[in-house]
Amino acid sequence: RALPSSPLSPPPPSPAHPPACALVMARALALGASCAALALGVEERREEFSFVHWPHRDSCWRVGRPRECCVFPADHPASAGCWDDFWSFDFCCGGAVSHRAVPEDDCISSEPLARPSADEPFLFLWDEKAGGSTFNRWLLESAAHEGLLKATHISDFWWPNLIGAPYFLKFFGEERRQALAVVSGSFDWRAAEGLCLPRAEGSPQEGVGTPASSLQDARVSSRLEEENPRRSRRPVRCFVLLRDPVDRFVSYWLERSDRRLERQGERTLGDVPLDELRAYLDSVRAGSLRMSGSETGVGCNREAGLCLEGGGEGGGGTDGGGEPTETASFRILQGPQNRLARMLDPEGGTSPRFEVAARRLEMCTMGLIDRKHREDLRAVLAHRMPWIREVHMTEDSEVHVAEVTHVLGDRPARSYDSGVHVAGVPQQPEGVRDAKRNQWYGSESKWLRRNLSSCARQALADFNDVDTPLYRLGLQLFKRQAAEARLHFALDPTHSREPATGLPEIALNISYLKNHSWSHHFDGLGLGMTKFMTDGLKCLLTSRAMQCARFLRMDWPDDQDLVMDLDEVKDMIRQAFPWGGAAYLVE
Image (cartoon, rainbow, N blue to C red; front, side):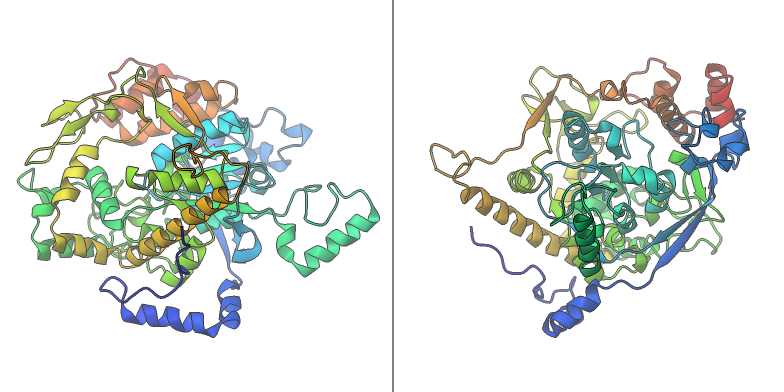
């Protein structure tokens, strides 16, 4: 296959990619090396984040742990008995975290990675509603197969549910970050910079013995670091999943919105008049959202027991008064607008810059996980990250309610939500299939996306005015990476071929599951307190029966849910965990 032209060639002007932007890109390309050097340079950017704990500022000390634990380093003998897998020195001690920007070309790389390690970590920057829950299961099984679970953090399952880069940097201090090999979460570029740490002493460097065994090697190492500082930092592999911004918004809106636009079921999102839809979209722009100050990923990460001192990172409308816009879950990370671009350009705040986001996107491996692009995704991963395993259910595997789809008719099938009966014909999955984990709104989303008018789709594309051209660029980059992968395998004389065509066989290793449980992976990790706090905070935050039943170890069907009274939830926690648990969470 011919390789596509450079993905940074200016795309043709369109309503979603204005001529001015194309002109800026063309001028930037014409300036050549001096412009590239300027683009890759990094301004001296330092940030400091001050934290408090949640639900209590003094959570660390509520069950008898002495504050003197913070006097000594975590590895000091006097600290014995102070800390566990959740309540750590990083989490409890020191209210502030300082973060310094790293030049982009110092360590971020999309080069192939045979196996992640503490010397060469892997980072999945998780843009919500792009298939990340499914891919996280792939990561879990891959890390388990490689024996890396103790060097893994996935903001999912029973690891702390960290959302937002500042909270990741707080929970994992530099020393603990140094030990991570696999990281996944809804973070931004600052998480990648936070993983760009100096190489551990004795780790390999090109042109130097490993470890340095002589004065000669030490001198060579010092000279190489002076000539090229990136050699002194461990290389980080970045991976991003892409999704069409219109489709992503529909999925996000169905799951997170209060859905007042539907007028209690009288109409669907697709029936909303265009002027009314545009007015609504203007009200939920990242810079226009009225915020409470405690939104997840902005002012707080209550799912992990942390908040920023004094509120958030400049969320739109926090001081404007009035009721916050939309639901709290909708306002996570300041809502859905331009989420991909804001993830790649956090310095841009609510107005991310296309040039910066595009430059950083090209530094990452990327993919689309839907069926249409699955073969290309397999090719890219088989070439660049052959350790990643695809995860399937077999014909005889457990059928989870999340896998049940519904036959679509003239009206949308109602989604699973708080016990509402589904107005559709259930369709059970058959045969070998993806181990999908979040499909509650799949049928309704599919119906709505199929029935949106072209004007409504354009309004949603314009709403994501940076993400729309960024997605088109990312799609071109992805196709180029897939073509490079196929060329790599085609030129490898040792690679197996398909008998019928003579083309190279490209596939990922596959893990087959009998059920959706992941608990067996955590049995030997020593994360008992993390599991307790993660499940307890989920129960306290959502008051949902399914979450609380898991935490309180009660039987509850997996196809029903309801929101419980918060006081009732707290009483149940007091009864189930009368000592430390109740003190940490509700007392």
